Length: 264
Image 1: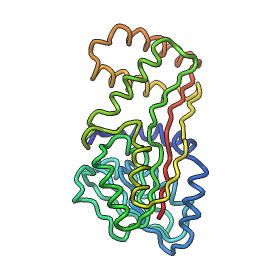
Image 2: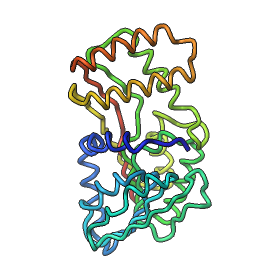
Image 3: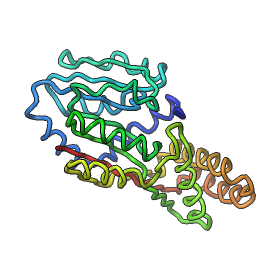
């Protein structure tokens, strides 16, 4: 599985929090009410941002298992369980290895910015595993293929198409579903008798969010060059104009995402 830096995760955490779909978060809080103790499995937890956002909202006694392949990122989440009603276990596991995942007793399976990186087979196994224990599923901030820059430039659509093509390459789980992941996961869960709601949760990046815009820009340039090495000339010209706009504080960017809640 490809990894993400702690710097990147810290930069995106407040944007993720602001972008989450409030309606679906409220529905999850309502679903949680009947349980005395909530047992949650957080996949690809990184430094624990998903836990930090959800635990205070869900309230009461909670037992969380934070799972990630990166031990250093997991270590950064230590000390987060400041509430005595929360118990947190950190597990360093390869999510591509299904035999290492443990579902028994889990009532909620959650993840953030994960399923667009995985294959259809992996996602189907996730759906089957959740259904086997009748766990609710709350998957947020799955990329939907939307990239809209303001002001628009010639080349924006070409970049978006190449980025989305790269999103479907293998990220360690087989060929990734990329922008179609959330809709495909919805169909998988509905076939297993889940009631599924899908709601938009786009990033709306303003000019003052210069660092995040620039990191996204540079990451996308690298991604395009990986799969389109002959695109250097036009890409260099486009990137130079985009950098100028970002540095001048004249750039806005929308990145589309989906939030998904599924309950039995």
